[in-house]
Length: 88
Image 1 (tube, rainbow, N blue to C red):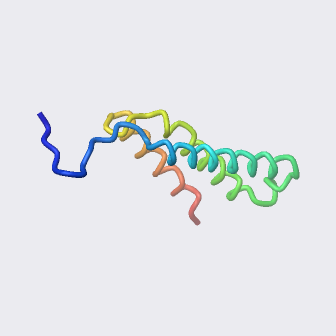
Image 2 (cartoon, helix red, strand yellow; image 1 turned 45 degrees about the vertical axis):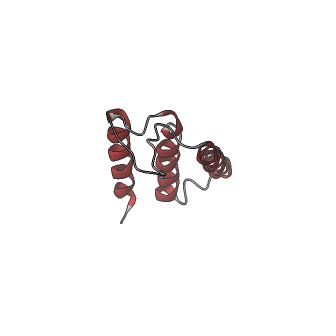
């Protein structure tokens, strides 16, 4: 049995406010990716476009995974490593 001191709790999911902010952030990122694609700027800025794609993939499934699961840890490790390929 886990004993918690006053004011502590185990969080298995993101709080509602954080989930809403993640959805807004993902929507803005996907909108920006779409805008860059439609205007053809992905040819001018391929590395920035790739970074936005990776950032979108990084955000989308995160509200649906449990904090304390191994799948969240593996997901976090992989998605944190991907943007390093876009650094020159």
